Image (cartoon, rainbow, N blue to C red; front, side, top):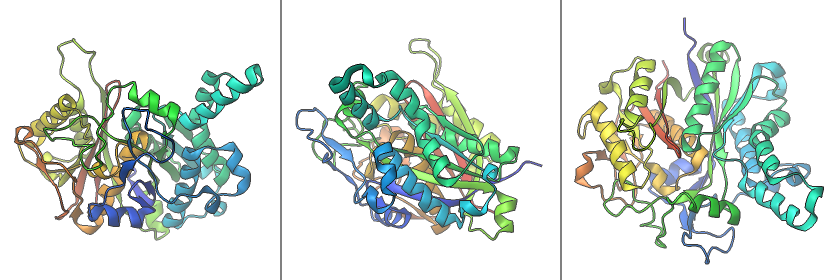
Length: 404
C-alpha cells in the first residue's frame, strides 16, 4: 500500500506577511507586499520594485553565534523552520535524529552570501576561496544549517530548478517519506535582493521595469511586461499520514500527486511540457480534471509564457473550466520559495473554503481563464493544483487534497 504524505506544519515568510497567520490574512484581503527596493540603493537599476519580507530581525529569532555564518536567506529559512516545527507540534529533541530529514530548494545559490565573498576577494585576494567554490558550497548550506540546528541526520538534499524547485523539493520529500523516513522538513526560502543578485536577475530579461507597484507584475493581462522579484517562501513539515494521525497532529492536507517535465529546446517545433506535467500530476494523484477545484498558476508575467500556461490549463480543463489564481501578484516571484508559498496558500484555501485573489490584473479574454481577481472567492476546495516553471524549461505540477 502506498504511504500517504501529509503536511502538518507551515512556516511562512512573505513580502505581505511574516508568519502564516499574517500572510494568509493579507492574501485574503488582497494586500500587496510589492514596493520600491529598500535593501540597497536601486536608483541606478532599470528594475526598482521588489517584494521584501517586512519586519524580519534575525537577532529576534536566532542566537548571535549563527549570524556571522549565515546570510539573509539562511536566517529566514532557519526561523521559518522553527515556526513550521512548532506549528506541527514537533520537538526535534524528542525524536530519533535519523528519523528526520531536510529536503529544500534553491534557485541559484546564495546571492547575498556570494556578494560578501566577492567583496572579500576584492579586498584580500587569495586568502579566500574562489567565488565559484563559495556558490557551490552554499547550495548545501541552507539545508545543512537546518539539519545541524535541529539535530536532523536523515535524508538531506537541495533541488536547483529555479521556481520549479520548490515543488521538486516537496516531491523528493514525499519519496523519502514513502521509503520510511517519518518526518521531512521541506520547501524553500529564497532571498536575493542585493546588488549583485539583482544584476544576475536582470540578465534574464524577465524583470519588470515599471515603477508602479500596482502595475509592475500583471500576469494574464494585456499590459504584462515582466515579473517583480521577491524574497521569502515557506517551509513545510511533511509526515506519513499514519504516524501523523497516531500522534494526533493537525493535518493541512495531502501531497497527492506530482509531475515534472522539461521543455524541448527552442526551435525544435515540439510542444512545451507544462500540459504533460499537469497530466502526470493528476494521474499520480488518481484525480480527474473535474475534481480539481482551483489552479494556482505559475503566472510568469511574460506574454508568451502566460499564453503557454493558459493553453496548457485550457487543454486539460477546458476554456474557463476551472478557477485559476495567482496570489504571487502580491509578493512577486520568489524563485524557489514561490511554489512552496503557493502550496501553503492552496492548503489554507482547502481548510477555509476560500480562493485567494489575483490582484491588480485585468485578465485578457483571449486567455480563456476563469481568473479569480480583486477579491477572494468562496468555494468548496477539496483538491488544488499548483504549477511552477523554472528558467531553462523546468515544469512542475503538484496536486494537494483535503486529508481523509
